Length: 590
Image (cartoon, rainbow, N blue to C red):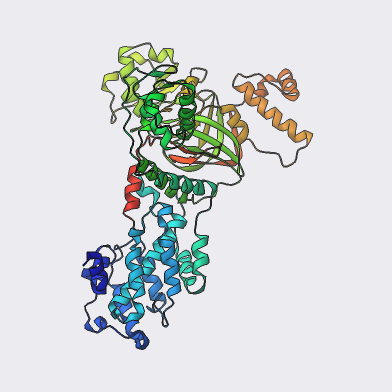
């Protein structure tokens, strides 16, 4: 006899298998009272006895057994331990509705087995058969409630708390509270289907990622021969032949960028226009630079397996469920560290987008946080962090004594300037570093001409840079944690207050403020009112700071898979190695 059939024939063995397979349903905590081992005829069930069995089951678990156990205990206690699902007469429709949704949880990045859907479905079918004891009915009721609450809170707020996935996540996100939990359970008797439908995320990006996942799910069993990496300085040039081109063509055929050709091994010996067009379609999805050569960045992206694509989508579906506790408001700035881009929003419209440089892994990664820009500083000086002084500058100065002078860096001790030659740079350590190094403002300043201040505990800010070429790089994770912005002046204009009415007076006021900012950073004045003001009183045209009122919300987050402005799902390298840990935690949800 088939093993699975033998197990199903014995409901007690099913229960043992089910409850022992879950942390929550530990067989060792099962009530042993004999009266609850009786298997009642469901038409003659003793409701008081069932309530008592449920109470014994619920109270047998400690508050650390499961992340939602406190809510479950509260719900059952408030209902005097009445059954939530196995009421008399049994409303199997509600259990079936729940199990139907749980059976589709893979669309959200989890597995139905994590919710014991098959076992719950089978046990639910036995409720009226007289084959389950009071104890088993109580466990089944608790099992359905547990799966229900995990599903509801997970879809609404995330199955894993963000701060558990990495030590770099600092902005608070919305969490379940007693009101939400109560609302969910109140809707079970008559509004369950509507509740579960409303909990489904409906954002454009979420739905696009789900659709993309369906494509890769169909490809998970497709085998691709790994494409060998090139030598350190080797590139496959357009118009040239290479032994890896047939493998590249085969990989692009599987995902549809290149039409299938059974003779690909002979057809694609040369890097031709057809292959370039297909490769550029692939690069659109992976955010790679488009050029007429193939390097290891492209090959590494092509070698990513289809199960890895599914995992990446699952990780980012979870990240989309993390909603910031504080609303962003109509006008806000969003920074995706993984994509190394910044977007400025007015409502749902992207008003400005740009490349950025972010923290270099693994030691100077940019923190993920939420704050508000309250001030813009023109021509900032740079007070160099101690970590940079000890780890980098001290070692440079020992070998190059003119380094500080060339970069207009001054040395202070107790606010008094001292000669660099008076410092024993070799003795500086993390515990002993009594000096302050400040770089003068100007074109050579590392912060450039504009700095955007927002509250945080990490001395992190947005800023201009004196090295503009960095924005043309593919890998822009090169900073010490701060965020360098490609278009600082345009971002400044975005942050400025918007007039309540478009009158000539208001427009002139904004034009003058913009020209003051331009003049302060060495740019030409453009408006007539700005030019008139410059002629009459040039000193009044100079600004050191601009207070931003109202403050502009900024959210710095990390998503390695998202919907780009062209409406295409785009994949990015996991440069901070955070996807794997998130997937591991999602796989442990039960």
